[in-house]
Image 1: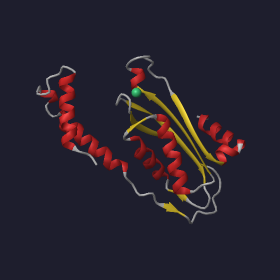
Image 2: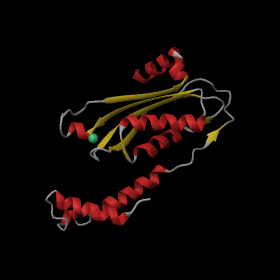
Image 3: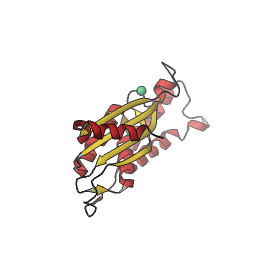
Image 4: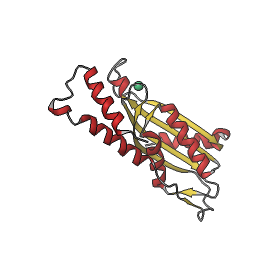
Length: 183
Ligand code: ZN
């Protein structure tokens, strides 16, 4: 649950901590705005995973490429963002494609690390769809790397998670990775 009061107090203190005057015009409403934003994130995270069983005869790979996402690295609370590619091979159950987009949003709108985001999406889809296999690739730019430290704007960090036949069957894995790479 989001505690607005705590967020507001913390942001005000944070602004003081970096030497800003939290009462100047531009910053006066910032603590409330940040609290409202996190409330919004919380709402956007929840959704109903509706499944369809009547498409039980489709047993080929379902691949949705380039699902855009925005998340916050939990080490610096700076955004990391990019694309998620999701593939699964159904075993009698499929979901609406928009639910895959909602799944990505649900796990990205929180403090995260890219590796865990990748795993959580794979585990969730494996649990919900009970498919023959799941493959996830996440490509992201991290502002904590682009803006500071290594100062490497435009870099891409790539992570992947493979489950079921994507792990066991080399042909399935190769097909998935080839489809992800093709324009
Ligand atoms: Zn970071």
